[in-house]
Each structure stands twice: as structure tokens, then as C-alpha cells.
Image (cartoon, rainbow, N blue to C red; front, side):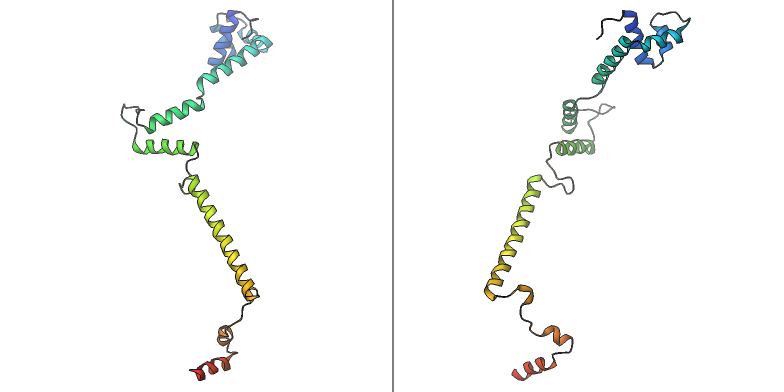
Length: 177
């Protein structure tokens, strides 16, 4: 912290951060009420005072804002039933479950969409890709054996029969039976 300011000025800064009103902070720090508005404004404009206030704000934020480790420890205590509610009772099962879900999400244990583990999801993706490649291989083998594209294999006349254009094909089959 800046050592260029007096203890009275430090009190002013601390009260200013607490109250949010420079005139009130000026009076509460022990300065006279006469000319409080103008004198408080001068103090706020002072570079040393500004830097002291900014450093104190950062320090206060660090004290107030939970660190990631603190959050994880809290969630773990809730999940394990070690954290009591405002009435001194165990946390509800739904709260414990929610804490477990948040921890699992943090450690990427579950896929958010369907609650599958990441390894399960990755395994499924690999299996799908493997089956797709197997199908491609079979298609290539069929094409190689027949010497023709799969989509252009010979028709048995069924579609033409449906369209009524291959009546004689069906009549030929009846005669063969």
C-alpha cells in the first residue's frame, strides 16, 4: 500500500469504501464537517488516495470472492452430507445430488447431454466410425466381385411390374411354375 498517505487519510479511504459517500467518510474519519464536500472531493482526486482505494478494493474482492478450490471443497462437503442447512439439518438429497453433478461436470465425468461418461461417448463414436468403414469395405468388395456399382445392380423387374410395364415378365414366371 502507498505509504504517502496518513492514518487519517487511510481511515477516510476505508470509510469511503464502506459507505460509498465521500462527505460522510470524510466526517467519520475525524475531519471537520465544515467544507466536507469540497475537501472530500480533493482527497478523492489525490493520486495517492486513488491508488490506496484501488488496492483496498482489490484486497476486499480477494477476501469476499470464493476461490475455485473453496467452491470445490464446499460442493464436496455438501455432496458428502458434511454441510448443514440453515436449520442445522443435513442437506436435502436433491442438493447433494446437484453438488455431485456440478463436481462431475467440473471434472468432465459426464457428457452434459445424456449423462454418459466421456469414455462411453468416445467409444460409441469409434464404434460408429468402425461400422461405417466396414460398410464401405463391403460395398467395395461387392463392387469388385460384380464389377458393377452397387446402385446399378440388375433389376428383377419388380419396379417395372408395379408400373405395369413388365406384364410379360410376370406371365413368363407363371408359366415356369
